[in-house]
Length: 129
Image (tube, rainbow, N blue to C red):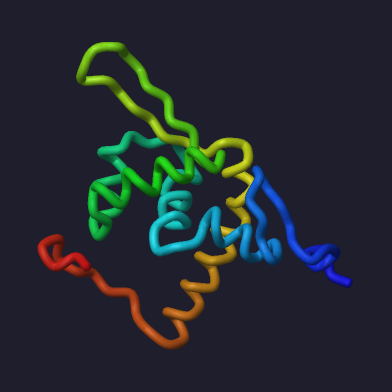
């Protein structure tokens, strides 16, 4: 029997999932969570840096996804200074860093798919999707 199927369900932080794939997708699934983690995999970044790199995501969505990733223990948020403007820096936690091999596999798969069936293109900033 596969490890993820040892029991009928799995439980993490009081939440019950039908399997470990469901648990994983709850933590990193959706359109932006893995992309945010990818942009933090090599270095810590300020919110404004993430915003510049993720031009297609709205500020509200980015903020909500960062809060969720922080709540789930994948991203840490450090605030420097007490008076505005404060400096806020996001980085991967130790748990978040364990996801880097998965991010690299996703990147490699996507790159291979584009090379075989698509193309890499440049879009002027005004037309960014």
